[in-house]
Length: 375
Image (tube, rainbow, N blue to C red; front, side, top):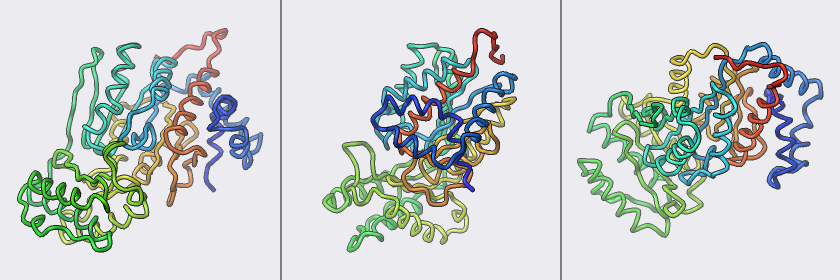
């Protein structure tokens, strides 16, 4: 049975939100309450409070996807979301924010990274060291020192030039092959570099704008390649192409084409409403590495995602009552049983979870008893 009782770890915060937010009414809140008993909710509350009172919680780690979770796909994060992340930093001296997106770095720069940097600069520069940003599903990583200076790292080697061209050609073929009557220009097969390929593909998309809208194939430092159906709110594919039913077909076709090369058969091929991508690593790998590197003593981990490509790190963050996972996606085929399906989808749902964390953890501290934060 799905461990949906975890929703009650934060139920008191949800009650407050339901009174304040039109998007989350009392009816919504009562719907979430329906399958759960009062005894279960009291037990979860007691577990969290006991964890803090007994000093069992050493760190708070909030792990989240970007597109569809913290912000709409390739759109700027809301100021209210950034403010809630600020509250996480403020309320606990050993709180950590870990963001893991499958997108390339340039898609995060203005939409999320800079707003987070500005928030920290206006708050407390020591927070920089508690922010970690993975992009390209963990093939790239940004960390900061106390002065806010970035260190950008890339992991793994780029695909060979020949494999890169094989991948992007077949991404394009997988797209065209799932649209009736669509044919790629023969010059696609003669392109000898990504730049040459990209020029031909972009011209093809422009010529078929009435059928496709705006679609790009992005190169992630030769390590990851992505069909982007939404580059921004202004540059995006037609609405009928931005759905997981269509992108799943593209991904399945692409996997079949990859099978022609044994060295590429084990690539991770992922899809969501607005993308199909491939790379040699999964988000789970990045989160596992982060947690092993930090070696937290007894962390409270809260993980939030919205797509099947997030299942890996949601699973890893949900093996006991101090590791909680939430899914804010619309479709949830194959969702692991232990992951709580959150009632409000997307960034609005994530804000509810963040707000509930802040309220619930704050309520665990009683200054009259001089509760000491683990140091």
